[in-house]
Image (cartoon, rainbow, N blue to C red):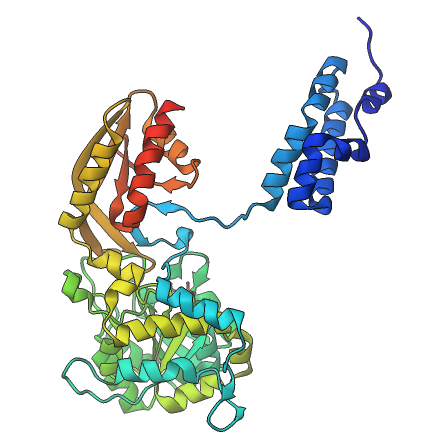
Length: 475
Ligand SMILES: *Cc1c(COP(=O)(O)O)cnc(C)c1O
C-alpha cells in the first residue's frame, strides 16, 4: 500500500477560491453574503488540514471529505449565523426559572419596548418645558400610585423609587450610599447566598459597609441587634431568605420590632426583599411571602427587589423607600454606573401599568401563577390524547409547580403533570431528546419518568409539544 505524504494530502484539498466557485456554495453566498461564507470555508478547510496533520485521514478519506465540503460549509454557515440565545419551551413548571430567563414579558410590554427602541423618545426630556428631564419620572409616578394606597384602605405612604440594573446592584448601591465606612447589623440567619454568586458578606465588603453579624443561624432576637448598636452603626439590614427555609427551633424579630428599634435609635432599616410582589400571593394560598406594600407599611425605610421575579417585568433592581434616603441613593455616582436603559424603562412601565389596571392576565408570570390545577389538567389531558400511545406511556397525574426565582421555597402551586415513560429510552434519554429538539423542550425527570408541567407552557405551544413528543420516539 502506498503511503501518501502529508504534503501530498494537503494538496488534495481545494483552495478557498475553488470552494467558493462551487455551485452549492455560490447559492449560499447569494443568501448569506461573501464574507460569512468565506469565513465558513476557511473553518472547514482548516478543520480538514488539522485532521491531516494529526494523521487522522488517509488519501481515500481526504478525497471523500473533499467531496463533502459544500455540505460542511453549509452546516458551518448555519451554525455561525444562528442566534445563540434561543426561545425554549419551559415545561418544568418553575415559573421564574433563573436559567430560562426568569419572567417572560407580555406582548403589551414588548410593544412598548419596540416603540421606545425604534424611535426617539422623551427618555430624558421634559416635553412640557422643552428642557432636559430625568429618566426616573417614567416609572416613579406608577410606583407612587401602586405604593400609595390599595383597594379601599387608604394608607398613604410617601415613597420614592429608583431603578438600577438588577437587585444585586440595588443592594450594592443602597449599602454603599447608606453605610459606606460604617457598620451594618445583620442576623447570622440571613447571611445568604442567592444563585449566581450573590453573597451578602461579599456585596457588603464591596459596598464599603462593615458587616456586624448578630444572633445565631436559627435564632436572633431584637436584643441581639440592640446590643450591637454603636455610634458606628449606619443600618439595620434584613435579608429575605429567598432560596431556603430555617425550620424548627427558630426566632427572628418581626419587621415591626426591627423598625421600632431603628426608630428608637435613629438608624434606618434596609430590607432586601429579593422578590418584590405587588400581587397578593395570599389570594393563591401562598402565605409568608412578603409583599412590597407589607414591608413599606411596616415602616421599613428602604427596600430593594427584582424587576423580573414576582413582579413579572424586565431584569431590574428596584429601590423604594423614604424620599430623602432614595434621593441620596440617586445622587451616588454608582447609581449612574448601574442605571438602566430605555428598553428596561419601557418594559417596566408597561408592566406597572398592567398592575395599575389590575390586568394580571397581561403579565405572563402572574397569568401562569393564577392558573388552577383543573385548567392545567384539561390541557394536559388533551395533549396526552394528541400524543397517542405508540412507544410512549403517557399519564396525567397530580403534582406541584414551583414559583422559583427566589420566592420562598415553600411557594408551591397545585398542578397537573404529564408523566411519560418510553419503551425504548430511559427517562434521562427521553429528556435529552426533548431538550435537543427544535424548539428545545425542557422537562423534569423524577422517579424514572419525564414530567411535563403545562403551567409554564404557553397554550399555543401545547400542540408543538405534542408534535415533538411524537417525533422524538419515531426518530
Ligand atoms: C434574587 C435575589 C437577589 C439578587 O437579585 P437579582 O435581580 O438577581 O440581582 C438579591 N437578594 C435576594 C434576597 C434575592 O432573592
